[in-house]
Image 1 (tube, helix red, strand yellow):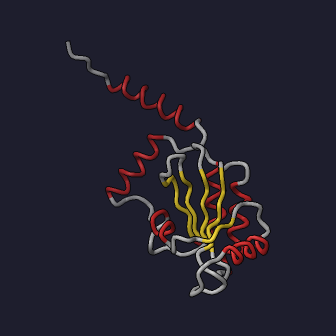
Image 2: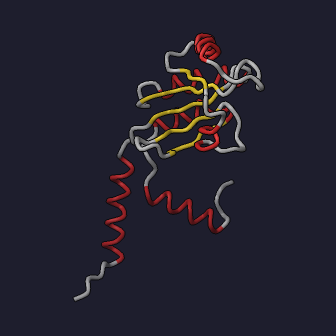
Length: 165
């Protein structure tokens, strides 16, 4: 005997899943930020992003991509000075990977300030970039995950070319 779900039953199942998904909180995430001492927007956005994720991200780490100029490699000393200048209490670490993690997680065409929210298993949950970094971080960590049905509708509109750009 074949089991067939009616449209009504399927709709109820989807609504139940959406309600459950909508009320769940964000998964535990690590916030990784990328910055540089010579970057003026970084000096405002990094401390604000750290404050926005305070108590919400499981760990927050700032990677310093360069020294005091774009051509200088970062050092422990320059990272410590930068941390003091920013006035933040999270780890500030020189990026010994030479932009490798930045390119892997954020993308090669993006610039600092930038960041990512990573799941416990290291998968990128969300990318953050640019002048609205702190607002994007705050929104990600304060708003519950989007309902499943809404995500599908957005994907369908984007595929049809009627979504917002």
